[in-house]
Length: 580
Picture 1 (cartoon, rainbow, N blue to C red):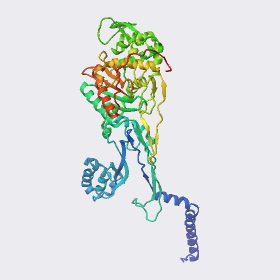
Picture 2: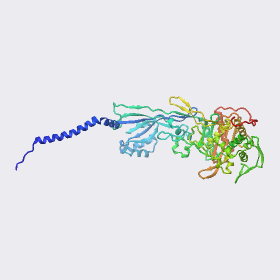
Picture 3: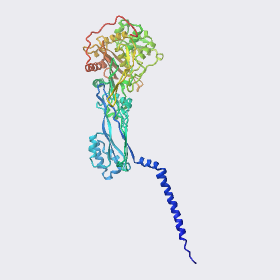
Picture 4: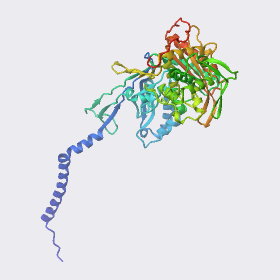
């Protein structure tokens, strides 16, 4: 058998054809990559190398009316690490070192280092720069400190629930921090650079930087010193009386600016994460309660405006009165006696107030309550401000038509009640309460907030007559004698009301209150104090009036408001009604 060798030329030709085909595929792919799709692949490569780093904007400060910081921002560092670069045998000593510098539990640091399949673990936020600098000098591989900012609240619990706080994402979560977040936050910038696999910048490559825009400062109407005094006094009285909580509001009569708004207990902004969530709310603006006798000024205003009573109108007053299916009483038993309407207000007679309300009628009383702001949220930017509860007059029960006259069966917030007395002190003109004084831009330009909306509610004459009645209420014949301030003319009203407990679904305990203004003949400041569910006493004149006296005395000295030097005047002789 003869073997024949194949034709080598044929084999070579087939091989060349095959190689040419393969090379043509590579060439086509190369043309596609470098020619047709070059920009696509170039963009993909750039994207892979591109690292975008956020440049945080500095959050604006929240200050009091005099520019003292209540919340501000300082430089800080966020510390992170690449656990995959930490050998297993050194994790424990590294964890101990990190815990010592950062003030964290060793177990927490060890758990983060144990995640060896992760390239990034955040160890701590908001670390002070000196602490971060010391830590970076330690022989720990792949440790990184990112420049950022940390929010600081120098006053701790000073106006805590009003100011609010920010979360880890630097956005406001409650209070002024939340409602003014868009003003305070500013706009973050960014830095675009090209990095290698180790996330180190590639030399000789370009970068693109968009600078951040810092936030603006928000100036409040709060006076830091008066706020401090208000919190101190109400906190001490809450503890002394065994009350569950307390509130104080100080308001400027002429502008309705809120000078202080204090709650006890208050939210400590340095440890807000550990605080119960109910402290996040500014209770002075959000919590509702039945005002009791402090509400009698509205009944008086309705009666005087309607012309159905005069300050010297005499009522024959028993210590009880039948109102549909209920018998309503004065606070203390007394024999039937004749008293003027002014005397009835000074002695806080429920019976005389009901008698006057019957002359007014439910519809007219309801309209006056609305005119004073009941049942509506106040403007002015107060975080969490509530509307209270004011049922329509056509839904009042028979007895409710009587009890609302002396502040039971209607609910208000402390802010709403303070606004009522600002209206009377301001000659019958209501001004929407204001908490923000203005905004300061990063360049230092201050833009003041607009004034609160003004509405005439009652005539100047009626306001003066009620003021005279309120002066008598603080005198020896009245229930608010403990609110008197030597040298000053004080007008005010006590309140003691049954307290509705929403959790129990029934009335339980009392609300003790006092609200008034000084000087009575040239009013400058309103102060309201409220104590909820006190256990050692329960009358407003006993518990809340002394709080008023102490806070008002401090505020008068702080604002350098002198006594007027005049004696209490008698009742105005001539009357002129709405519109004056």
